[in-house]
Length: 106
Image 1 (cartoon, rainbow, N blue to C red):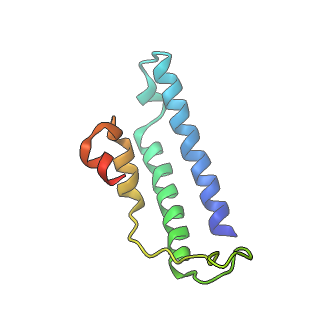
Image 2 (tube, rainbow, N blue to C red; image 1 turned 60 degrees about the horizontal axis):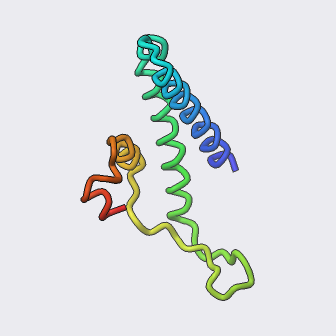
């Protein structure tokens, strides 16, 4: 349960700092970068990536638990490669939904 709790906390912290930066930018405050140092955002992002990766490792090793009475309700093993940092970097690309290769793959 601890890895999931850690992920929820780090997700909330990372979300809050991004929301704070977005709101300050919308208000037109020019000192956003001075008030929130880049290293702080990167540190929260790193913690989020580490916690999310830990959950993915658990799901990679977790297989065959029945989730309901339905015949096809076995919990499937996470069997595809994951790189949380790369996924976040992709989502940071402005207008990534409009870029043809990204639109094709996502």
